[in-house]
Length: 97
Image 1 (cartoon, helix red, strand yellow):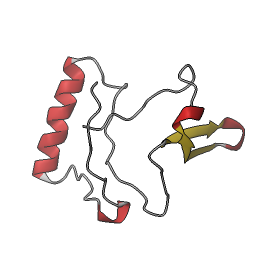
Image 2 (cartoon, one colour; image 1 turned 30 degrees about the vertical axis):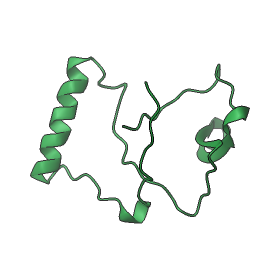
Image 3 (cartoon, rainbow, N blue to C red; image 1 turned 90 degrees about the vertical axis):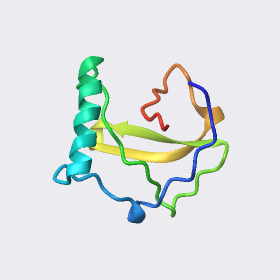
Image 4 (cartoon, rainbow, N blue to C red; image 1 turned 60 degrees about the vertical axis):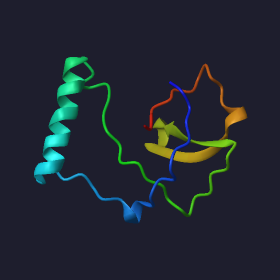
């Protein structure tokens, strides 16, 4: 995929949630589900509401990275220097359009 300039995501307090009871949202979700089914991506790909938490500073040379700690049953997302990421270990899980 080609990199391109993206608008700054809204703060979590400003995000309008998807509501499957809302006819417009329901139609959108059904259409996305149909595309996932057609490509056999059900169970592999989902949706994420694009947002940020303004109290977390992420520099231009950083990415938010999720860490999982099974021994403590925790998942933590924190900024990490892109140069410190091991491409053999990292799995990109978010694709923003």
